[in-house]
Length: 302
Image 1 (cartoon, rainbow, N blue to C red):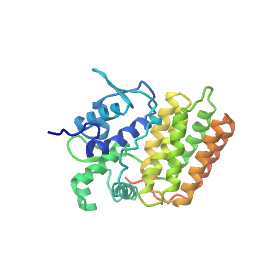
Image 2: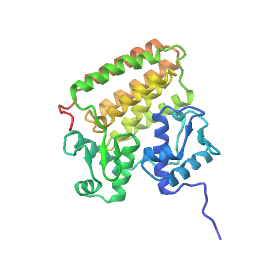
Image 3: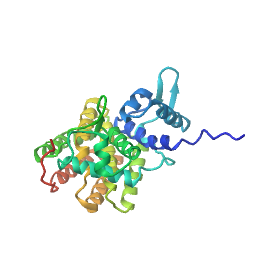
Image 4: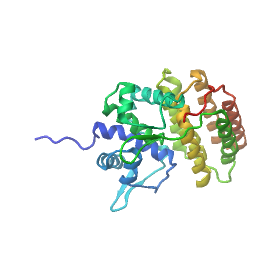
């Protein structure tokens, strides 16, 4: 009798793998950082069993190491992890993420909502909806309420909040590059280049905005992590969570995506050359250009 190979994760575990990696990247975890099934399961709003199996798969891949009674420990920087055999999130899932973000920002969805209301509004099944909600919960856009229902995070949808957000980034991100001892893992740089080139090569679709934002966020958080200052990184992580809902509804077209990617790649070029003053100036210019983009006029939903 043949037994199913343990080397390949199940479909559910495959869906969890990129979410777990993005959590680790978003937290800026480095070698030796500890992960527990309980924490990951709570953040992704799933049971511990598939999380345990997914982490065990990452251990077999050499990304993490299982420690008795201590959970799992990263063996290398989360920013350098790649999951070549993990499936990408489907366009259908990302399209609904974008639609939910747009409806929430426009005030068509309340701050608190039930799964039944969402299923009726978007005409989707509960399993598919839960997949979407778990993806949004994994990046802190929504959270399950105790008992029943879901609660959206507050987003920075008004013009004053956006201006404050860009001013905040303009202060911190160039300063991170100029911090004494600033260093980026060469593996992270290589992976960032690969991800940016993949975005540039792929056709742009409505659902692409989700992946673009997450790649963009990973780039900026990775740059901040290079300063090795936990307070700076935590501040930028919080700002990223607040921006995520607004930026899932991308309104600036593919041309701006190309410009942004090329500016990121240029910064990496100068950082690798050791010209940190130039890279910091490019970061400042990059943020200034983004701040001048014509955002839609809309007040934050209540």
